[in-house]
Image (cartoon, rainbow, N blue to C red):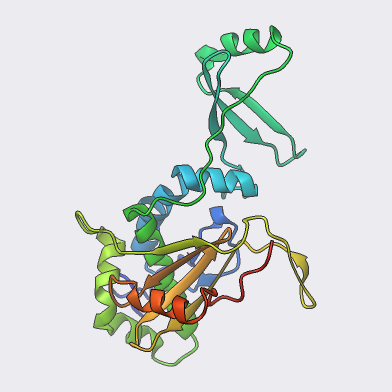
Length: 266
């Protein structure tokens, strides 16, 4: 077996690969040992997943959805208490479900407390972030997820590992995910298709929220697009090349319907 990213032999590797990070709520969608080598697994966690998770959108969305990281902690969000001109942090408690806040810098704690004690009411300013930035952090993260989705789709096919590793059409995206590309960003289509906390209802699962889901779409030009929804934002990326024309055309021809399913109302 070989790693689908760096192509080195990976039979002795011990790490399973979370296609979506645990810090985004994924505990079940995994690639078995060897599909992503230990070196790439550790590198992606540090250099590809962490920058996306630690971005303003990453932290804010995880806070709003109350999704803990691997250590069981929901990331706080930063804000401002204008009356005391103090930067604050807002925390979710998993134990009791309550919100708490504190001065972001301990040296400002006394000023914050005095201000709150001297006013009967006040205001916090918190950032509003509706989508990730269309930058290399997002593109490398989505590209990594896309290649792993492709591997998961093919995992039960005999010879699939060699087929994916040897597929030269995937090399450009592999390279972009692994090392980036100076002054260039692999294009990713992004749009919200349902609210992050939308409650779905169906006969099979009853009422439930969806943290993430995906599919692969082949357009007439034989381009393959990985379409991924995380917290209600749909990301689409061309696995074979840095363009979105085929996906844009597919959307126009299908009344902007998501390939995942019809966009829910509300």
